[in-house]
Length: 240
Image (cartoon, rainbow, N blue to C red; front, side, top):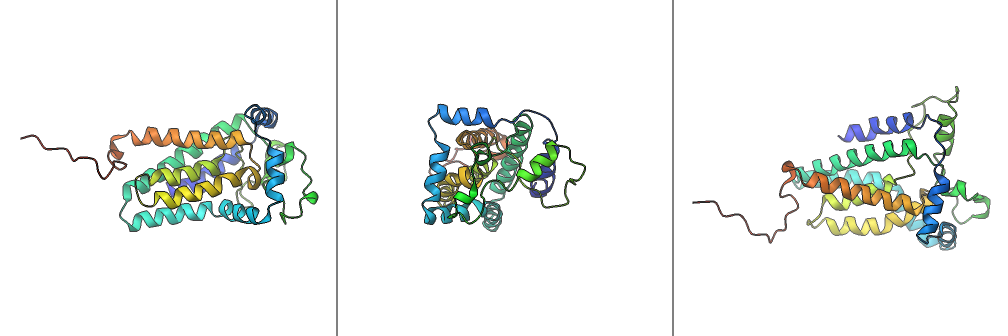
């Protein structure tokens, strides 16, 4: 499952972007406006708060390694069902997100709002647009672009997979002492996605909602029965 997530799904992400579907940026921005989120104001606020940006930058960049470390920790603790639950949730959520993004391709909020990163020296680099070159080449079916020649870059804008991965980390350790550090990490990492991932707020909401829905469905399977049960729950009494 880990190999599938880290190798095959990124390749699928690249493949489904070879299409001419209209960019979804305008309606994603309108959705943000409808719920009252001012992306530009938030982007400017983070830029003018350098210490906050440094924290968000680290949190955003460490998601993959922390997810892997969580898996190793659970293995070390003998929590094998939680390991499988975590990986299944990641695979299904990522797969569904990629398929949704095939018909809702989007560049990035920073591109849509015409951000000139020369006006944002506190960042030190251009956050959230590292994927644009690959996405443009795929949509243009450029003869000069070879899939896999460079490391894969996430091309999903809606829903936000970064948010989903964080929520799954916390969800997989629900009612376990590891839940609280994972939840704390989510509280720091998720606010980083509009800036470091150049996501719209609706991307973040959709990513969180999708990951929760997937975990609820998986938790209802017999193979995972009882792994999230409260320790204080009474044990069933065998029939005489």
